[in-house]
Image (cartoon, rainbow, N blue to C red; front, side, top):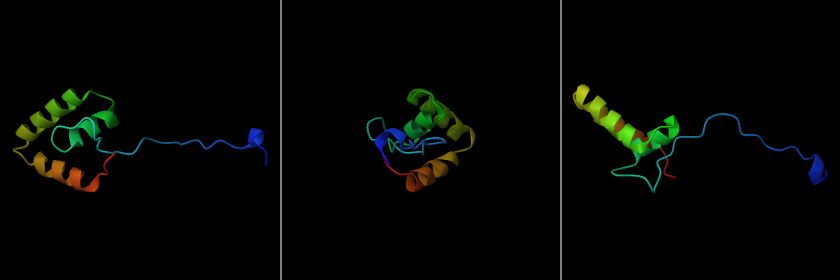
Length: 73
């Protein structure tokens, strides 16, 4: 098969969630969520902090779980 008729692989679907190395303050979870949702890292951090306060700190456990199961970039 020649290169002109070769089929191109098309990746369908969303990008996988990863924790970036270059844009992290603590563990990179908020930065990864920001990239996944298409918002700024600052917005993600502020929203995550507010939701953590409103849930009585239980969202901090979710943060640690996301850190443990998500790959690093």
